[in-house]
Image (cartoon, rainbow, N blue to C red; front, side, top):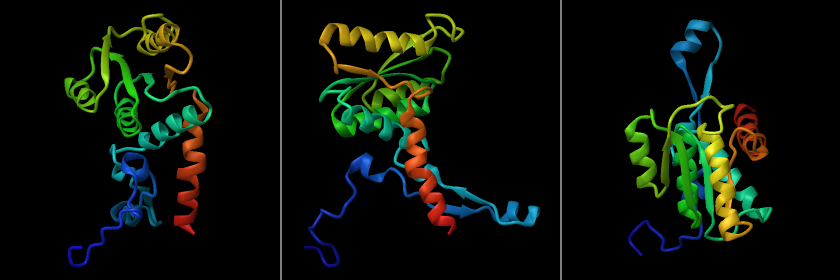
Length: 184
């Protein structure tokens, strides 16, 4: 052992999933002063992926696992313009899943590069109306179905961030109770 350090790693958080949540509250002093009341902000940027979408990604992946919808080594497919895809890529890397992200081709190239660096396969599509079958979310839904058709049930999930109850539950079970406890 190095002086002051223990070789016991059992108490360390487990990678991405172990670091999500328990974010601090910070007081916005200038705004609090200007408004005459205490204004607090939840510092979700300290999550490992840099935003609140880490909670959503963790919840979607854990729910898919526990319900048996995603088998080991499967693929998580999502239509996103950025943050959720980044968070899903980090969660997937932690758990050994593949990620296929479908996004509009007018997004910043830095987002695409970051997604690829985190292990995602990125499919760029032309921007389209949500009612169009070629909208990035609709393409992602189709890609997940195609993977399951070719490789069987559980080979892929469509994360479906906008309609997936795991999105809401991430905040109901995590963010909300944290805020309640922190505000006393």
